[in-house]
Length: 410
Image (cartoon, rainbow, N blue to C red; front, side):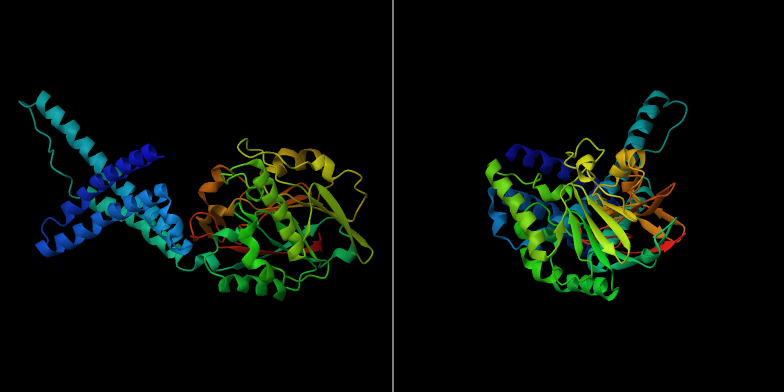
């Protein structure tokens, strides 16, 4: 661990040294006091960063408030990501100067190329670095709790008349262990209940790793109301696979506690199984699978064969599956009777652009179906952007989502 910290510190210092050249060039003609203050602020960042890394190695950081640690980690990441962009611009300019210097040696009797620092590259680097710094810091200022209600009407062929106007609320990826505040989260419960849904579905990732992370929020989320109840499934984080357990017994105990959390919430947890719910004379089949992904880095706990075993004919079939890659991998190939699949997992990367007629996020290069509604033939997939957040305590362009789906006859 100590070797890794030293290696990381060296990398960060190299980024600092390169990026510093831009500040040094731009402030070259400034007053001495301005330069001293700016340089002191600049070099305080690596000192704080290295000190924080040392506290992590020694375990002293365990005594720091969690909110402080989360915000500090995020700020360090943002600043170094911005510095990296500045450093890359300076590195490109230095390579140009080195190349021109070599060419000058070879052709010194014919012509000479300038090897002085470019006038515009330092400015370009600072502008380039400022864009993510400003946007990511802004995303931390309130977007993590700026819930957006996405309303979508699904045109269903041959829909049973008693399901016309049926309202479904979907939430996903609560990640309760990431929440730094409780009061703003309560607003999401109010939005959900204000829609007066017929049923509510939660599509996985209740916690980051530990079942205890949900304890402070049980009373809050148990207030979600719907006449037909709340049905839930597990996400990849709910299995505790990302926590350094000392033994398998502790991991198993945590998993059992996590399942108990759903009971405490009053939610019906579906573990590769299904339920049939009557809606007047219509029958709604609710199928819930454990986490299943087509990506090899995620274990395949989901078993759709088991979940649909002895499934009787219903008026409408809904599948809850945390990872949207499941839809392409199995659902639209072998389960044509599943009308609607509800997923989450991607968070929309918590970063991107969504405007009418256009949406983009880096996550789309990993998950082509990453947010909103998708359709193939008569089958639908809806990917929720997540109610909570993970890692970065904010969102830029992709806000936390509450989904309202209304069924109607095509």
